[in-house]
Every structure is written in C-alpha cells, then in structure tokens.
Image (cartoon, rainbow, N blue to C red; front, side, top):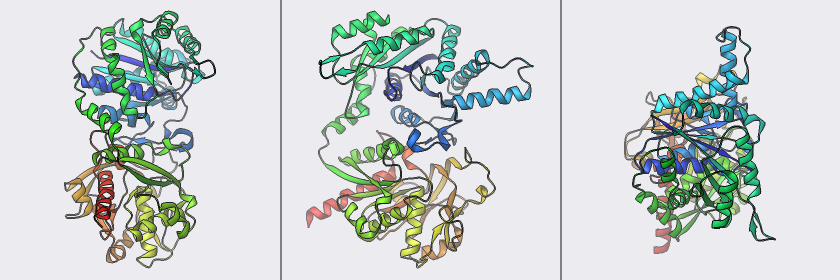
Length: 539
C-alpha cells in the first residue's frame, strides 16, 4: 500500500521545498523503497511551457514530452528516476479537465464547484500517479506559500485525501523559514509559528517541520517550535544554507529524517546505502581545481532559467576533478568580434543553451565563431545547434545571408527552417516536438565516441530544424552531421572535427544528466578542457 508524504511551505516562497522533497526521496530510495514525486503548482497556466523563463525559470521536459516545473529536474537528479506528465499538476490543468467534463455533461447538470469537483480532480491526480508508478511512497510537493489564495484547493484536497486514506498512511511535512536578525543576533520563530497556525486552520496538522536557517538552531529553539506547533521534538529538523544542494540529503540523514518519517508511517527503517552520494559530496567539498565555462544566453539575469545546464556542467566537472564556475554572459553583449574576444578571453569553454526569439542571436553567432576559430571547447544545445549551423554557413560555407526563418521569415537562405509537421500548428502550448526520440550516431564521429554506442535517445523541445536542402554544402565544407533521426531526415548532432570539441545537438542532454552519472556530451566538453590544459602545461 502506498504511503503519502505531503510537503508544504510557509513564511516565504523559494524555500527549497523541491530540494527537501528530492532529498527525502533520495533517502527513502537509499533504504530500498520505491518513490514517486509529484509537483502541484497553483498557477492557472496549464503548464509552464508558454511562460517566460524570467517568470518561472527553466521548463523541464520529461521523456513523454511533458513541459514541467524545474523541480522535476531535481526529483530526477536526486532519485535517478524518469518522471512523466502526471508528475506535474497545475491548477490550469485541473480546471481544464473539470470544465471539459462539465461541457460533456459528465456532472449530470450539477453546479460545478471547487468542492467537490476541483478537489476531487486533484485527488484523482494523486491516485493516477499511484496507479502508474505503484510506489512505496508518493511524495507530493505543493507549490507556493501557505496563505496564498490560489493554493487553497490543493490544501483542501490534501485534507480530504488524508482522512480518506486513514491514520498512519500519510504525513505532512512543512518547510518554513527561521529569519535571523543580525542586529539582535537571534533566530525568530514567530513567522514559522504563524505559518503552522494558518496550515492548521485549514485542517492540516504537520507531523514534521523542516526549518530553513542561516545558522544552527539551538535545542531551546527546536523545543519552542515543537511546543507551539504541536509536533514532537524529534520531528523538528534543521536545514542550514549549504554550498551545494547535494549536501542536503546527508544533512537530513544525520538528523534521521527518513527514519522518523518511516516511524510515523509505521514502516520499518532500513540501513541506507549512501556510499556513492557521500563520495559525490566529498568530491564537491574537496575538488581544488577550477575551470570557467561561459554560458551565453538571453535569460542570464535569472540563473534558474538554465539550472539543468549548470548542474550538468557541475556533474561533468566532478568526473574530471574540476569545480566548474559559470560565467554568465548576456549574448546581446557580444556585439562584435572584438568585444566577444575580450568577453571570452578568460574562459575555458563555451555553452550556448536553448531558447527562442531573435534577441541576442547575433551575439551568439559571434561567440560560436570565436570558439570555432580559437579552438575553444564549445557545446551547443537546441538553439545552440541552430546558431552553430548558421555561423558555419555564413563564415565557412560562403552562405553569407544564412539565417533561420524563426529570426527572418523572408530569408533567402533558410539553413534553419520550421519543421514540416509544425507548419500548420496553431498556438504555442504543447505544440513543439517534445519528449524522447531516438538518434543514430555516425560511426567514428566525436559524438559516437563520447556516447560509446550507435543509438541513443534524448529529449527534445523545438520547432525548427536544419534545412535538408543545405546539408550537402555544409558537409562538403567540413561540418559533420554526426547524429540523425532513424529515417535520416532530421539532423540531431553536428560537429567540427578539426577542433578539440565543437559539438552541437538539437536535443536537450542536460535533462538526462545525473550527479552520479554525468551526461556524455558534457563530459566530452570538460574532457576537452582538461586535455587542452594538460597540453599547455607540457609546453
């Protein structure tokens, strides 16, 4: 029988509920239990696919093509699992389903209301995930902050669900903030007390408190929180600010959080196998060598917009004993080659991530050209491949007016064009080429050597592709198309073999990188950096 753990947050947003959910999932899996994690987001958008990265950060894509919240990336990376569309639920998707049922007459003329229709649909999503995964534990994170109007239907649904499941089959974990007042030198518990009070007023008594804090929490403060929030003393956990998110599971394990959760759910605790994770954290703490990778994009003011790319770089860096420092580079700043050279003069590699729209494109082309001409290790992702092809077409293949129809719909040299199946698509939400697709690698290519196999599967999120009419001239001029769809029609990977590492892919490899198993393309990038440093040291 599946046990349920509901995670809410109080006082402020962005407390790290997703990291707590992922960490608890990691600790339970380390004990041999199966775990599924769901994210419930209160916003009215059906999914984050059409939202600005400035608003919502990265859109994480699952194997089945769902555009989801970035927290699902944390869930996958920590628990080393692949999630699905059912793992991300929004108010928009819930209301969309309920309204569709009403239009079909499925409610038999009843007045459709938040209770019971919306709350029933939310509970149905929980049951769908349980049926799909059949996990020992389903962890459900509720987005937003307790007290927000938009999250009330989810809280009410949880209250009902917990009653229906019965005592001992679910627990509530409340993540809250203990502000530190520097002037008085003390942690304040009152905001957290009030947050729990509000949660209790909705009918949910949390069994566990996870307290975010800048400094250690004293025994007296923990006892105070336990007393005023009606939780057991051993159920108040400290979660200090840490240098790496990957330290959080071990910090919670030291306090026996998973053991306490199992006790509350009447399940047997087991000795966890965290050796690999401990080695990972030990590497993070003790890696002395550092390299700098420039990440040139249009959303660099918000680091969360590229969070999976950054984490993938860190994973690959650890494989070669490097701490990777990211230099955030607004592509619009690369106005000409002289400025671009100056901006990239102090970096060891360049990454061009995915994105949409014309803003900053010329700067990306300048950065890629500099990388190609100076043998700076380069990795292009999705839009990064399209920019790589445009740059090569203009500056090597002699197609000086080469462009994408996304940036200039009237271009006479559309080396990048809208995919055939996209030409009659109306609307933006969920209409791209989304999800996991196979790719065949060219024998002996840089990409094939990096992966170590002939066929791969990677996740996509794009509308445009390399125009087949220009493949021949690009290849004749030295650009290698090293990965294609099984039918040979879609160019998935291109590379410039004269450089140590000049590779770009149409998919998003960052979605499949794991802390304990870095992605081959990111490893290839960092390996090229290491080899260049070794050569330089020998000279």
